[in-house]
Length: 52
Image (cartoon, rainbow, N blue to C red; front, side, top):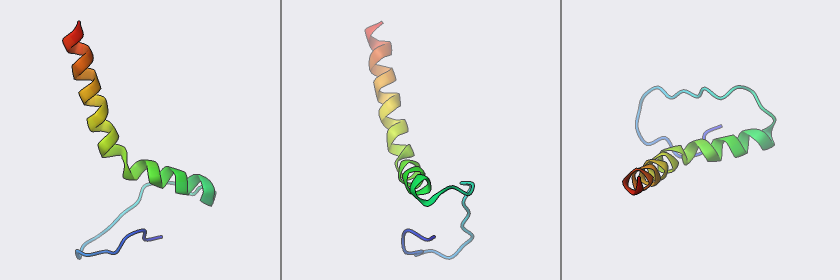
């Protein structure tokens, strides 16, 4: 399933195994936000390290 328009030519891949649709939709939403979550976690870790 393509969730967004493909605006650039190329090869696209997915590595999520077969799942019931309800589980897949939740997983896909989390994957789309993983970069932002990683940045937020790193910022929190820096704040904790500064407090030590």
